Length: 316
Image 1 (cartoon, helix red, strand yellow):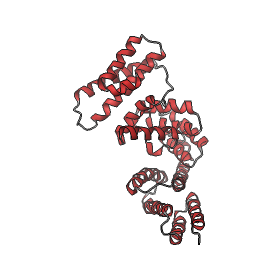
Image 2 (tube, helix red, strand yellow):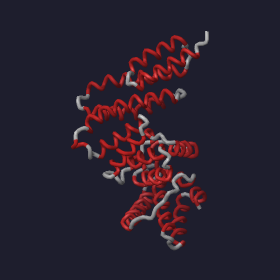
Image 3 (tube, helix red, strand yellow):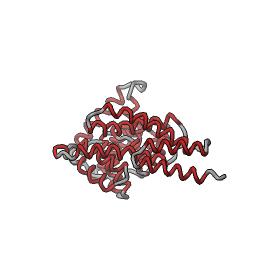
């Protein structure tokens, strides 16, 4: 008997149940799939995922506030990625897609109830969360609408900028996405949550940097804009306003002091060097945009050479 066909059908049925927000039914179908084919890796992986979420759903009763319930789903989505890393099994995209639809559909339902209150329609955090949910369920046009509203209140927020960049990339607005990602990683790289990113533009860059540098966590985030420039991802640049240029130079001065004074083994010390290089690159781009004296550009490049000769050679 060919078990592949019935198991494939059961897997699809389970995924459809998940997308319809019925995780319990999905569990029942997946258990049936494993009885039919005990060694099916995808069914086993999917069942682990569904059981993990069913366990988390038990705690949903602890929250009486609708908004808190939506926030709980988003927080658990991030924890789910940690679970996936710990499990270490091969990932199956159809399963992860169905789980994503399940999570963000549920969160969106709660947030929409809160959004119905006129007083909340200008809350930037709620607008960001609604935008994230619409992105998670694949409605990129509505995601763009809410994220564009959120960014009006959070123009220098790395998380909001990166989410807006991600949606633009998913809508094939490549130039806008590149500019926004560059801004996000300059404003606050630690605010960018790679676990919520979906576009190949940023996922590909993440994978390249992880492979080349062997980094993860906060240090990975600080190096990504530098390698974004090296790999030709963050190529859309702009001239800085006078007040922005002043803040950039002040920030560079502070970072130079941090790099000189902090021992390399001190906590968070590894973050300052790539952050300083990123600031130097912004300054160089500004000089190039305004056709500044080439001597100033070379002077800044030499500063990069002093703190990281390898990076200097790659961008020179």
